[in-house]
Image (cartoon, rainbow, N blue to C red):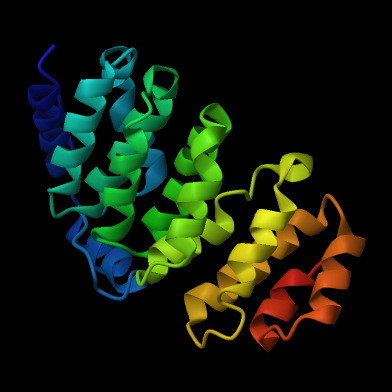
Amino acid sequence: MDIIKLLIQIKNTYKKQANPEIAEGMSAYMKDKFDFFGIKKPLRNDLLKAYLPQLKNIPASDQIKAAKWLWGQSERELHYLAFEILYRNRKLWTEEFIELFEELIVNKSWWDTVDYIASTLVGYYFEKWPKHKNKKAKQWARDKNLWLNRTAIIFQLKYKENTDLDLLFETILLHVHSKEFFLQKAIGWALRQYAYTDMLQVKKFVATQDLKPLSIREALKHG
């Protein structure tokens, strides 16, 4: 199977269903940072059904090729398709995929892609290869790129009782005084998510650290 030929077929299918009016609204919602076909998720799911057999058991090298090709397209729905392919074929990932995820995080960055990469793709990767977790998370937390910072803070969102609390607190404290909205929000979100596992621990952390008001509101939203 030629993965790029398949992707071109899917892209052409999307083009035929393009809706300029919806596309305008979707783009506006993303601060006009990206182009859209104007295909909402339910319709995208329907359109992909015919291709699902071909989107299974894709070798690692073709997954990487597919993700990079899709990221090179201008329409945001094709970036979302990269997620579909990567997550569906996660059992076939290899260790070097962390380099791909880092590349996707820092290119064409916005919350809609970064949050999925962080919580779903990177989150799964570090469960599969935990030996890379601390080094990468700490490196990202200290990087100048705010989206890598955000990833370091939120990649454990789905970990629940398996959350590395020391690592979470360390990555948060590096940005506790940041004026950046996306980091303040990430801190609160990560704490709120862990609060479902241990609210008392979160309340203690909030009470003893100088968090920004937004982070505090988000962290204690359900407590």
